[in-house]
Image (cartoon, rainbow, N blue to C red; front, top):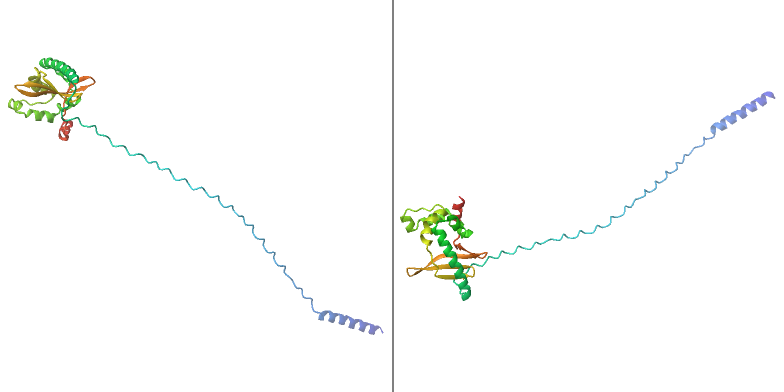
Length: 219
């Protein structure tokens, strides 16, 4: 009996072992959880820049063109008529000036004579080219006189010809510009061209230096 029990136990144990061995091992199914979808990145919406105001167009400053210089009207080339009282007044003034000049010239007072000259007269008759041209006049050339400066002109031209001047008439070109005229051997001779400057009559000239003469003076 005992051996039967033992056999039964062995058989049962064997069956158990076989049963355990025959049962399939359970399949472990690993279910991967899906990765969480990444959260969408938060888009930072930058504000659109405010439109810059268009720059105002630069104001173009148009400088006015300089007005052309108005040339001073040339002095009249023809004599003019003046009222008798104007003529008489000017005649008296010029006559007194000529008498003063006669004394100055007669005494050979060069510096005082220069006080009666306009700047234009001084400039013109101090120019070497002008003096050389005057030196070629027959009377001077025949006597071998060569003018080198204004003093030479005063001594060799002015003194011999103007020391005893006499006023006989005035020719008006304006109220301040006249020619003093004398009668000499039946001919009318111009003594001086006189211009009134600051109330005083002065010896003037309408001659102007040419470019060649001016360059000679500068040289």
